[in-house]
Length: 378
Image 1 (tube, one colour):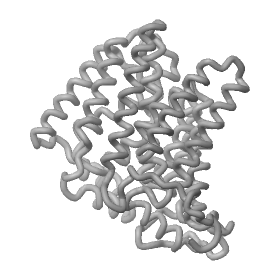
Image 2 (cartoon, rainbow, N blue to C red):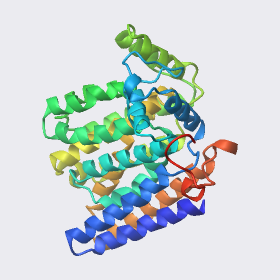
Image 3 (cartoon, one colour):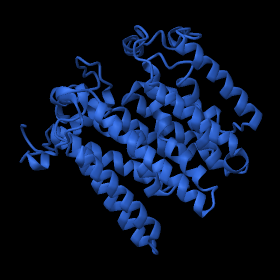
Image 4 (cartoon, one colour):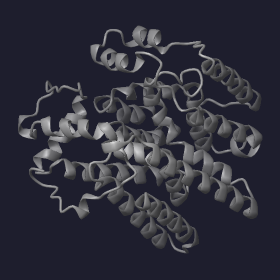
């Protein structure tokens, strides 16, 4: 755990240095150093990523070299063809799976950085919240969907600007990386959504009631029927859906629901400053984050919903940052200190409790200390 704690503290130091930097070149240098630290954390991890690590390793080993690749290639995991193609491309350059994890990390953080520079967000502030909310799962465990996530974040820029065509040009190919990205297509219809304070309160209370019913074992809605009615003719989508909809044993952690409704409450309390008088960009980002509410209440008992929720969790650091900007200096210091402390606790808890035995994450090792070669046979 010491390695993870050191990375978190280092990112806090980078935040302080970034905040105090006088020139844009100094700020950019700090940002690049931060990215390098995170790329090494995720990209050189030694066999860490839970059970999924073995799956992705097997997918890589089974992927044909690019010269033998065809769009009819399949594998035992029914992996999307776009992800197999990415594996084949990397493999054709002589990399093994250790090399692939490093390239994946570089690609992820490069796309993330490119997206963040387009938005009204403090980079170093974002990273601290990101460490808690998205970092480990998306760069250690979920290697397909994480790439879709950062492509989506870049595409949101076009959605905010009203360029639906460019947004869809980014999103539709993502279906060949992770099928869950189909849920991102209907977002083109919420661009002009504008909540009144009363509307936010009513919607939140309705879903809070659904959460209470869910905790009591009363399920008001099952997404199975809806998914079947829309995608019933797609064997691939249905096979993946069935894997997540058998039983209700994988409900989202109640802490996730409490956190989401806590942010909803803050948005209501500071509605005028945070939402009503916000820029179109900020308002759109908040709307995208609020889409999590039904997922952590009405739909929290269905594991497939976690696949959808992950796309919108990336907006959590944005909303937390927006709220911080409405406070004066002293109150902002108190707010940020509390947020950073909670994020550290959440970051530590997630890693410490993630699985056990061979799949535990808490005993971090980098293959840089193992003399591992990223080329050729492992």
